[in-house]
Image (tube, rainbow, N blue to C red; front, top):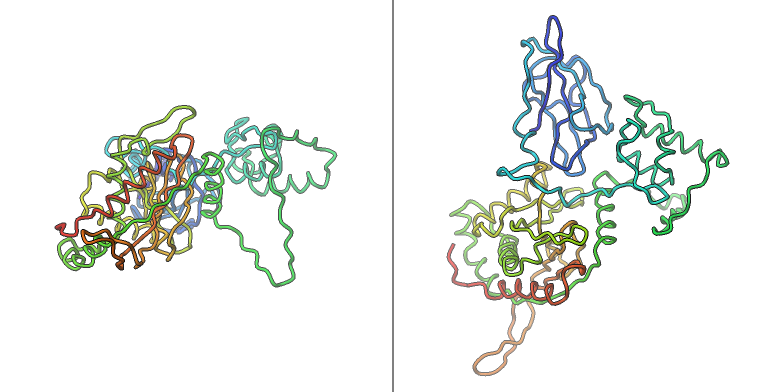
Length: 449
């Protein structure tokens, strides 16, 4: 797990600063969820001291040294920039440079390559009522995403935000500060000039009136649900979505899995589901149609050479997270099965590493898990396509034989592909989806394991 520390001088004992670790290339801050230790507690080397959350994953921060926690510098729910000291640990060891663990220095790189920022979840840049972005750093002060979100919702421009007195460390504006300012602002509307209306952006939706008669329950979104909500809205605003559908006869695939699943478990120690088979077909189709394995940067199309397939995994909370299978086209079915099972299990246990949800180039979501026959998924930015697999159902289907057409009971399923119509037109999107269906329909029922 990530850890980082640096010594500060003391005549008798070494005092080590526990700093907020960098959890990934695109992560610049984290929220303190809870302190596992309090001042005066003994801590062992690598023992978890606190839990933190980023907009990617939750994680624990272990101690870089053995000693006594003498001071905590931030409270729970504080948003702290990376590399900022968050606690002081006193140790009897001689002062020396406490190196960050490899997990910190390698969180943003895998196999020597820099990873792209994660696609899910993502928080769009906050903007003021005049449409101008609110900066995280201004006038020498840091503004947390929460403060910027409140400022955006209250139509507070950057200059006005800079004028708010802050009670946090180094004059930082806290949630309490900005809420108090907003309350005062509403009481004295004449003292604050109204912001100019935006000419290019739609007016924010007005809050819906809720009757508090005891027959309703108001539930505050949790942190991840807010991030997912922002990401979904941003995706729909960014990409013109088009969805295509095909129906595939997967009888051979179903019969093959039913026949070999026990032997597969015996050979590899893994239960084979349909997901790795779907991933294999998608990876092959992406090699055939590389212009689906792209992202958009302004007017430039970035073609990805690596095929990194994200698979949407449901969490116990009901939220979704998208761990990534890297270089999926280079893995055999046994390797894909192991990757799928491992990532899904650790996603449910909240044990994914930041780099394991970064760098996806295409996403697969299995709506059939919930008994749905098809879906219209929302693109996982900055990717340009996402495929949904529906439930496999027995249905009557027409088969062509040398003796004429017959009706038979077959295992059928729908596949749906949502794609960014800026760069993926109907011919490309439809052809890619048809190719995935072809690979599934042509699955070799005599394939070995």
